Length: 364
Image (tube, rainbow, N blue to C red; front, top):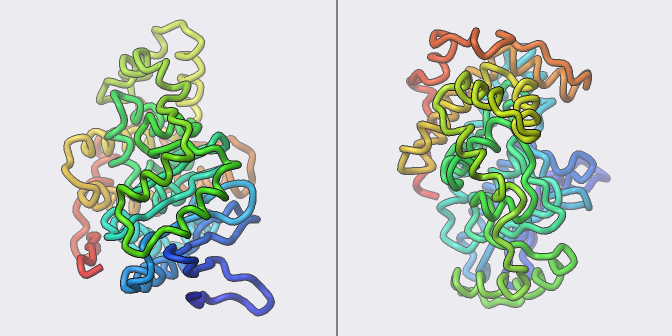
């Protein structure tokens, strides 16, 4: 079975969807952009899940990325920037559909395997890290770098980060630092490290499973190829990270880092100094609220409210300009200092939005 996905004449589709054996394959197919995801791709993934969920011949889903560079570098930031520039509504539409899809993936009734090889960032994390079986490799470079764009870790990122050990999630969420494969397992963004050279054999094993395969059988198949690694370099630094990032105010985190003369503290402080002050304050509050939330959906509702404020903000446009458009890596944040971020600035990110609130389709 091949699901038809719209493509321009003479071009491969941006999403390849087909059944191979008992596997419903979803392949992100924009390798030149490291498979950055568009609104149409999110919609086509949702349609593919409709068909695979209803097809008794499909026992599990496999998400993979085309090309050698990675699963997915995130959402189509340039399109969001252009819409924000003209006060358009792409953010409102795209994030609504994306977040609802993230929740659907987390609830999907059949095993959902993600090959998180190479670069996995932002929206790519949303498509993979909520799945039931998450495979990383020695090539994995996973990050939630949104605070560098005047944003915050979204797509359920606040839920995932808040469930990492200690303050590891706070560290990754505020610094945007990259996890390798074992780091991702330790931070609870992934389940197993499989050498990239063994992915083809694992894929073939999955394709040959029966249609009614259980989650435990899928896990056993993955474990046969896994290295067993459960902790990367970040685990060794957890005592310091837990101490620095235990605070509920960005000013206190920064003050602790300034007091610590270690090389790691100073490099972490330098990284934070490059991020949006407002983005970090909003992100930290979202992470703390996520920690006491009982569900992914609660976090996604909050993230959507905050995302609409971000979309309208100068910081988002400035962050994307500096990183993606002009690439001068010199954003001019507003305000420029953490101390200048007031409660009045932050409050709108957490306000209810009435008829625009995120609603989940429980029929899927």
